Length: 181
Image (cartoon, rainbow, N blue to C red; front, side, top):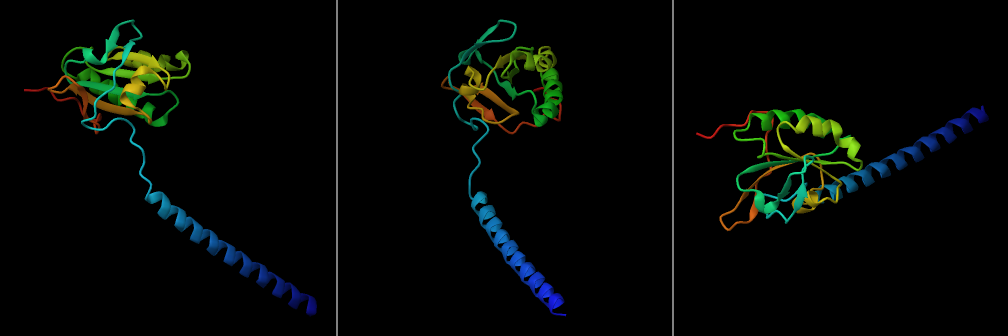
C-alpha cells in the first residue's frame, strides 16, 4: 500500500508543478502579446503625400524610365516570386491594369527577384499590360518607393510643385478601373 500512496503523491506533485509552469507560460505570453500590440508595424512603402525618391531604371524591354517621366496618375506595383499574396494579387493587377483607360505605358510593375530567371512567369504575365522592371530588393525602384513588403500597389502623380507623390496606397484591384467621365 505504501508504494501506491507514494506513487500517487509523486504524481500529484508532478501535476502541481506542471500546472504552475503552464500558468507561468500563459502569464509570459500575455505580457508578450501586450508588448507586441504596442509595437507599430513599419509601413510597406511610402505613405499618401510622401515624395517618391529619384530613380532611373530601364524596363525589361530596354525603355528608360525615371521619376520625372511620370506625368499622369500612374499605378505602380511591386511583386516578388514565391510570395503567396503576390501570386493572388498578380491576376487582379493584370485585370485592373488591362482595363485601365489609356495606354500600356501608364502602369508600372516591378518584379523583385534575386535571380532574373525567377521573375520570368511574372514578366510574361505583366508585359502586355504594364511597363515591367526586374530588380533585386536593393534596386532603384525599391529604394525610391521604400518598399519593405510584398505585394505593394500604389498610385503616384505629379504634385502641383512638380514632385511625384503617392496619391493612394489602399487600392482595390478586385474591381475594374473606372473610366473618367
